[in-house]
Length: 292
Image 1 (cartoon, rainbow, N blue to C red):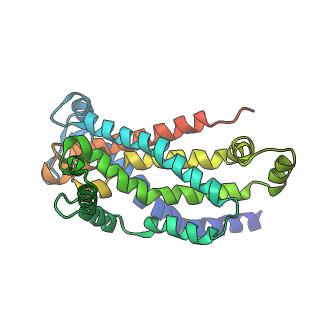
Image 2: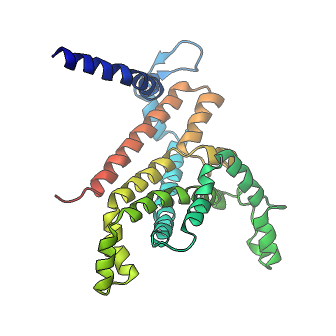
Image 3: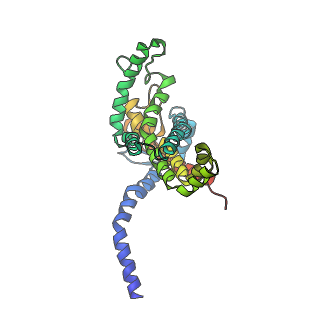
């Protein structure tokens, strides 16, 4: 009995630093955000308790613009799931067939993930520049000058222009996750299917994709929650403009906290982001839940 208690204390002692870090970095800020969301507070003076008024204002006030910001994030999530993930899956299925130069392709596709998002934002600012950006210059050289735009300065194109760098940056990330799943599928199953006359497309459809369903579920969760939390790339490219066309909850939250000094409202947005991320994660897990 004494030995069990000693072992338990040793385990607790080793886990304590990680537990304190987890509580201090993740749990405590969530609790504080939930607490501040019930107050009208400018971050410096006295706090005024207003109950759920911030939550009501968040969903009813056009001046806040939360619903529009949320709609933009959901559009990014939709594009990520139905454009980015199929591209990643396609690349993973191709590279998982032991093609020549497989490792080199993996490195090239994954490289954007390693680059700082701020650097990527600055790079795409140059690409989208209406005067000397490579996109408009190329269109002009091809005789398609009518298609040139101020890509980040036009309401109709700004959000789509923000999605393209996101696609470029993270397609390799999801590809690597899915590639690991593809490589874990038993080679014996592939060989048996080939002997039975199955094509590569049929093998992928009936053997590989069902076998990596848990990895696909994780990628979908990452894609959707990542879109809901998107901030840095949009902040660098447009800062939520023009005319809030690319506003997302995270940029709106920063605006409330540091520009309008509405710490209560900013905390409310943070709480709603947490709730939405958890809700979508649970929903996706339920959708992908295997029948028993």
